[in-house]
Length: 214
Image (cartoon, rainbow, N blue to C red; front, top):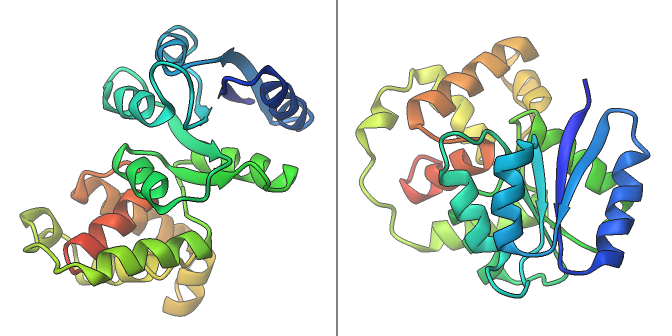
């Protein structure tokens, strides 16, 4: 079954390029396009894509506001990957706060765009190492807020897995580090996300640094 993708960008040429890249993969299918945040919100509701590739700067409602609205809708189960020309920390952190599952620059290689969509669709979103370092620097610099009750529900192993997730380790790397099976890691990660009440790994990493759990 193909991963259904919605493209959101105010430049038709950019959307055409992304469509060509994504439709060339047998497991990915572009099911719609939008040129503004308002159109994106409507299209997300009508088309129910698995992943939305979202631009930031657009006329009217921007991509960050649209992402926030889409992610907050309990009837929509789609991941948002921000794809932008601007490598700016304020966009990065606002995108994460909005609930985006990934952040990609438009100069990325075609296979990176395909990979980002697959990762987001799997609910196993993980920031690129260079972006993760910036997340760590931002939240490590601030005094952590008190550890919430939800984190206290984590088992010792789940807390350990969360710390390794915050070090930008993949499931395979965590499995090798802890000498356990990758399927077991996936179970632990799922439990961590459920107990913390977050959507994906990106949100879990932000949570960990914000609350001093890393």
